[in-house]
Image 1 (cartoon, helix red, strand yellow):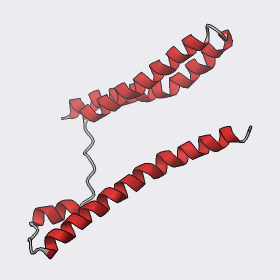
Image 2 (image 1 turned 90 degrees about the vertical axis):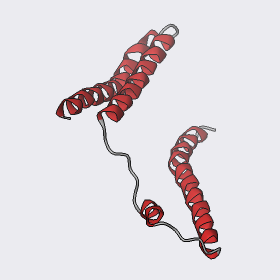
Image 3 (image 1 turned 180 degrees about the horizontal axis):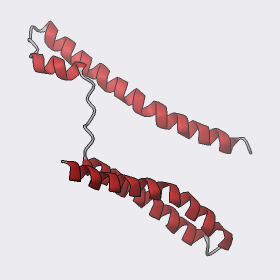
Length: 123
């Protein structure tokens, strides 16, 4: 029974990595099937569609995106603080370790927010 907890943890990590990749591959396969069917019927693809399919579409970094990501990270930090406060009613020694855990996403969030304001000043 003791081995189920570590196995569940690693299975969860594997699922977080594998499931999105699997779903993306299914989406690509359906898109390829649709394109293949349209080509077989004689439809001609515009060059814009081909360029959009072959390019690796990644959104450009922007101050707004950094600000948004920073706020999300700060929310995660506040959630850890709230968890520590809630757990500390039963176990008073649990507050400080969870405050330490909350510091990591909190500082990442603050850094991203500062970065968004610095980038906004450059534009």
